[in-house]
Length: 213
Image (cartoon, rainbow, N blue to C red):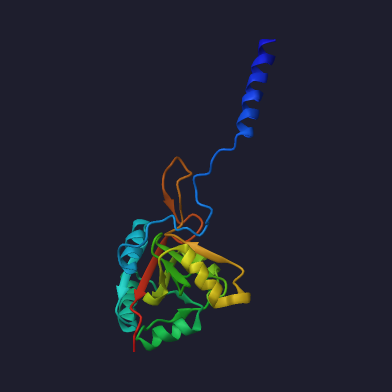
């Protein structure tokens, strides 16, 4: 009998609570920005968040400097098998002076180079889509992902990137948009951080100053 009475009391309290709606403290306008606006240059904010997530960041003032930095990286790491699927990107790097023989097979490559859609400063994320010539598999299956981006591709928040993507592709919106945030990592195994489990062990981002000429 005591158990039955206790249960009735609980149900009664729930019923009373449901009869009195809890006031909502949020504004009805869902477009309200809940994050603080950027207080630093987008280049600085992206670099800080990206490197904080184990990403390796480098800023270049031109495509020629980009080519020189990539060449030095490949020599330092002894990387010879570089995969590039994007023909326009390969041509840009070749014209800038990068002297490498690009691998046409993603399997067993040392690193893969791609472009991106946008860079998200607030989260240090790289926005990729299936509409790019590189596709999505390149940035996922290569042991090292090298992303080439330009300062004109920097945006503050994910919302900004999605709006620009919608304007860019209209009815031909990509079937998949990915926001890659740092190297692949997990801490599921005894709470020990392990990188490269479901993606690249290292992610590099070379940000190039957009030419105004």
